[in-house]
Amino acid sequence: MWKELGHEMVKVIGADLSLNHGALVELVDGNISDFWYYTDYAGSAGRSKRGFRMPSWAKKKDRQIKQMYRIAWIVDFLEKVFRQSQAEYIGIEDYALDVGHGAHYQGEVGGVARLSCWNRGLKMRLHDPVTVKMFAAHKGNADKFEMEAAVVERWGIDFDFCNQPKAQPSKRVSDPKQNRQTSQDLCDAYALAQIVWTEVQLRKGTLTLAELHEKEVRVFNRVTRSYPIGLLDREWIVDPEREMN
Image: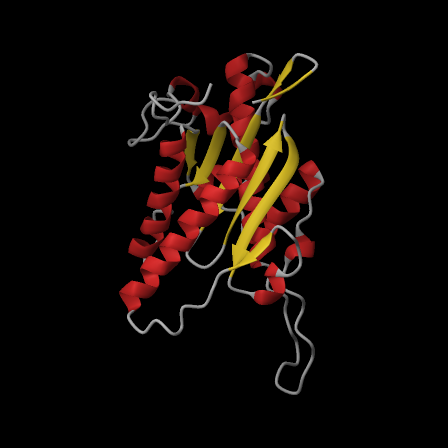
């Protein structure tokens, strides 16, 4: 934990992770302090010092071996981020219920991310995509563009500069569109970090539900069959033997 003039500063991370791309955003007392992202697009990775391009494993002919290299790379990436950040809390986007093709591979990424957090004693929270959209855009079915707009409008954070450069017009491409995968990942990660930071404040009593938008209140009061207890009445997901003090 950081301390300044006797004030205990809370550091949290939001993480939106996938097989070929992902992002983590760090907040200190609710303000963005750092971010990292990985992608298989060279153009996007080169737009920021915080961007990392995933290696190509094309020479590895065996599909299962390729997957092991990919998972090992992601684990190493996360460990480097966690060592640099030393955050105490983390929010990770949970699996979407409608994930179909490649769900088992996505599960491997989610599993190693959770295990990395567990082994480091981070206080973890898993939030499904609907919750993230409800909190940030106040709309549970918001699309990627609406999420980006919400992050820009509400918090003044714009990750557009990290995106793949727009394609140059050519004879074959008459109306090129910019790939916004990186900024979308970073916006989701930022929203996750803000949810965790809000929960920390609510638990400490420095913020009340009455001060939140009604859609944000629903995030903390929401109950389902899987989670019949509201968020604030649930413990953080953390190994008590490794919990950071």
